[in-house]
Length: 136
Image (tube, rainbow, N blue to C red; front, side, top):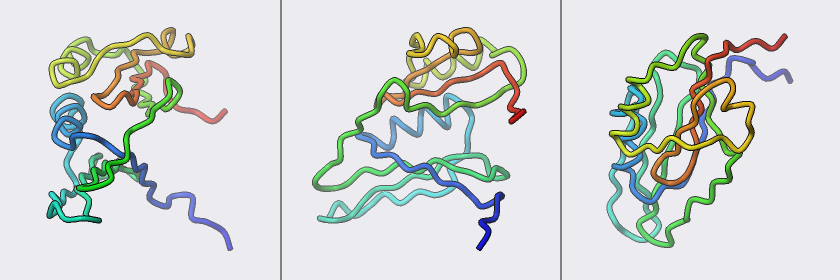
């Protein structure tokens, strides 16, 4: 069986505070809330927020458990990279910082050369790359 190379991709991560995560990705970067479930607060239930762009073939899912919270455990190499194919507007960086992001030096100097690295409230990193994506 061949897998459809256009299959939708979801990247899921645990978070401590879904509202803080939403501020970073939605208010800061300008993504869209695609789905939200606040949770009931009962054992085994999870709050979920899905964020992305409606026309993209991928989205991010952030989950917080009502009980037995899974602590986020990002490393400096856990990256979401957005290829902007041009300069990274300082206004976007400033807006992300205003909404809970922190500009940090990249673990890999490649990303400092080709973009800006920002850390979300749970320590996961977003790289806004000046490069375009090409698999050549």
